[in-house]
Length: 219
Image (cartoon, rainbow, N blue to C red; front, top):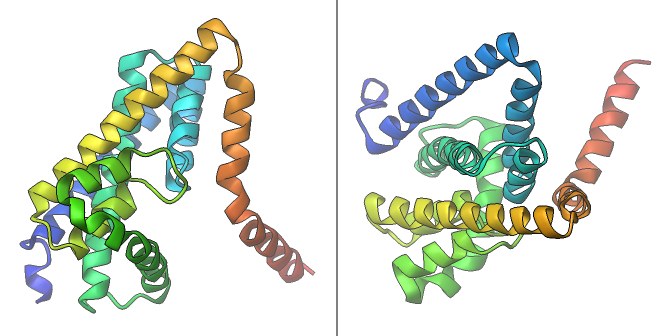
């Protein structure tokens, strides 16, 4: 089966994720040479999205003067990249093709989150996935949404069309909401800070344990 890895749908998605990642690395290196500040923002936005901070990534772009099109395009690009990797990884781990311990643990956590929402979304099918991904809630997002679609046995094109359309709609809404606050009330700094804190709260214990573990190893 190994030689058929990239012939499967999941394999092609994995290849797409790799291609998108290489393109992203190219642009970050390009901006690191020509505009270091922009390169730093691109990296920070990517990190925000990997922690589930869709709104935080958009807020970073707005605070640093990115326009509507670059902000929406880049944040959507990052979400698509992440979904390509996580969806392929989830399918391969559930079929026992990949048996990497840390990856399986991560996918198990995603499966638990998806199962918690699956029964609520199942009666609504495509529109349920779309609304779930679009909703600005901590447990929502394209990664979990695409996995729910897989559990509901939606065809890939239906699953991803709902997932990515919901993602794009959410990003556009977040951008114009933040832009409205920035132009009229200058409140986005405070709202952005609150969002960052909310995103980081679930990871504070892990960060603390990581720091303590590193400190113990350094003794």
